[in-house]
Every structure is written in structure tokens, then in C-alpha cells.
Image (cartoon, rainbow, N blue to C red; front, side, top):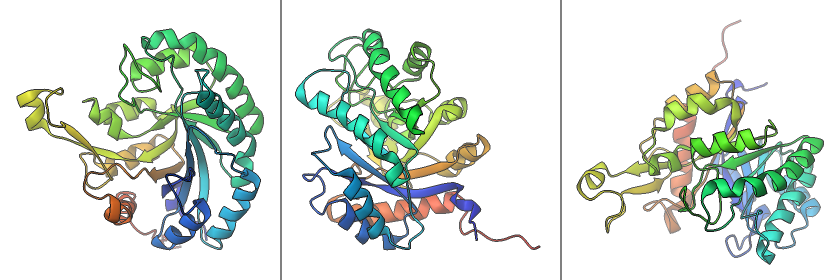
Length: 304
């Protein structure tokens, strides 16, 4: 029986780089699936490290087994606009994930736009258009879409190393520069709160271009903002698992549903200052249960 609640699945991320995930994706997936995650985003940092994606897709499917778990999104985080060796590996990673997405059942490839390092944001637009015109066409030919995460990676409008897609004004520039609906956003409220942006009006305005959602939140310490601003000695905000931060995820999911979003909310862990290290999976599983409750709880069939 189809579960209508699964129109928006609640899942998590699995890291592909060996240094960040010594277990490897298949074994990691095998161990976390029993907790109740409904979807997975497999992701890599800057390089695929020579991963055999054909073999990996088979191993991950075996790890999932009979569980009702999907892999709607793959991701490559790095800077494909520049031309160092690692940047070229990032670009090649995008190509490989686009070409092999169908083996995982993925419909979205996510990551950073890249950026011309150390320059004001608008100066990246010509290179952005050059690189992403080609990649967007490749994605469209393969039946997948591209989603840029709204993460600044400490970048600003004036300078940065990784990503131009961290501000609504930048989204306007990007989508005007390359008017291709293959390209959209991987959105989360965390980075907006960290920039003191109210995420809810932004969410409602941009839902049609949101192709994937990360389950990551933030807590803003407004007492510190008022007393020392955002450049004082103490952090004025923290990244949090959903359920431990400032965002009302019931409102987020309600707005996503009303806006027609059908996909997954995948929890991006490894950032929470409390639920980390030995408490990492404790925090992620708590966040998963919280998001399922915000989605409406267990599905209950109507009388017929």
C-alpha cells in the first residue's frame, strides 16, 4: 500500500570519502537503515577518490535490502569553476554522478556552484555560465536535475572560495545568467538563520526552484548578537540537528507540501555542537523522529 506521507521522505546523508567514513557507504548504510531512515543522500567532498559507481550502486542496493529506502539525491561538494587538480576532480565528479545517477535511482545531483576564488560574487557569473551550461545540458539529457546548496562556506558577497548560491540576491543573478530549469536549489534553513535571514518568507518565495532539502537547523544566540554583534569572540549561532534549533519544521513541511514539493528531507549531520562524536547518531535519529512528527506522524488511512 502506498504511504502518502512518503511524498516527502525523511532520511540522512552517507559520506563517500574514506577519510570521513572509514566503514564505506554500503556498511554504513547497512547499520543505520534499521533506525527508520526513509531516504539517503550519498555525497563526496571534492573527489570521488576513484569510486566504482556501478559496483557501489549494487552494493548499496544490497545493503538496503527489502527496506523501503530510496536514494533520490547524490552530491559532490567542491569548486568546479576553478582549475587546480582537485577542482578538476570535483568537476569530473559532477560528470560521473550525473552519468550514473540512474543506477541509484537518483533524480537530483547536488553541491556547490563553485566560485572564482577571492573575487566579488558577480565576477564568478561568466565562468558559472560557461561550466553549468554544459553540465545542465548533460543532466537534462540524463533525466536529472541540479540543486545548489545555499551554504556560504564562510564566503561573502565580496569574497569566497566555494559557492555563490548562498543568498537570494545571488540566486536571482544565477537564474538570470543561466535560464535553465534543470538548475535549482538544495535548501535548508540553517545557513539562512546563520546570516540572520528569516527562512520562512524565503522558502515560500522559492519553493518552485527547491529540488532537495537538507535537514539542518541553527540556533541564534540573540543575546550575543545584541551585546557584541556577529564578530565578537564567542559564536553567535550554532548549526543544529532539526528539533534542537530555532526552526519550526512543521511550518517548513507544511509550506513545502502546499508548494508542491515532492522529494526528501535528508538530515545533514556532523555539525551539531552537542550531539556529535559518540552522540552523532543519537542526534540524527532524534531529528528523524522529530521531522516525522512534523510531517504529521504515522499515516492513518481514511475510512472507505
